[in-house]
Length: 347
Image 1 (cartoon, one colour):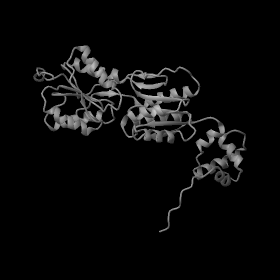
Image 2 (image 1 turned 180 degrees about the horizontal axis):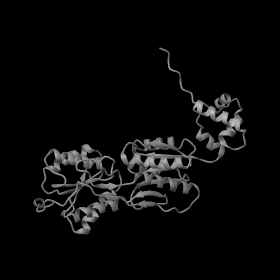
Image 3 (image 1 turned 30 degrees about the vertical axis):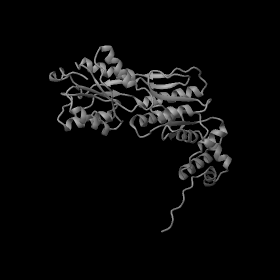
Image 4 (image 1 turned 90 degrees about the vertical axis):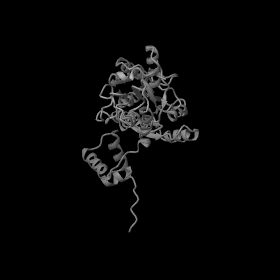
């Protein structure tokens, strides 16, 4: 069997040759810098389509002096919140005629962070957007050189320091969830938190503050991972207890795992235990019972980050961070507590 041909990306000279014009003429057509006769323009555009030619963004930026590439650094790309935020950044960049490069920061280890930063900034870039959802992202933001426009993305109502941020106020949402469950009549709310990731969790802070303000008992935080399997393991333990009537989970995956474990052990949701998630992933509305959760608009988060960066690149000074509050979405997984579970002493 013959070896497959090695792919070679077409260059401007290939376009000029196919169109029967000079390289400068092909360049003028693609850049729109000078008038070119309509018949020549049509031939060049036809050659571009036939060859699948794609301009070299970095080279064009260097020649024109206008940088059109945005570098994004993230500690994960497959997780729901990360992926939807990246989608929002890319959609906003395309609308603005700019390109996005995404670099994965494998861990918070110094070598990994430096390697990712070097790779992200190896091309001429207008600026950087760093997802500070985890420790890897936090360290990546610290590694960006001074002078390069940068915007960070995260969960909170503010970020210390001069770097502008696009934020979702998770603390307000954690408070909102907890207050809702207390209004339903639950004596307290237990909390399945996600990994600390080297920073304070706004979701946990909001939960704790709401309980303290209401004079309700504050149970010990149950530390989980971000996946459904971790929620299931905690669900096995919670099912054996009689003192838990409401659980606020740090994300929807944990909540789904928890509900499955409770169901497998004959504990009803929401009749015995109310469950609330966080993120409002697409399929949780179809779960049975459908999941009460918090809707975080990650695509809007990404778009707001891109808007801040373009304004920073344009020279605007003293930009204020962009903050929105996610919204509670009430569905079938929450209800007032059963009367026979309200007399149990909370540890």
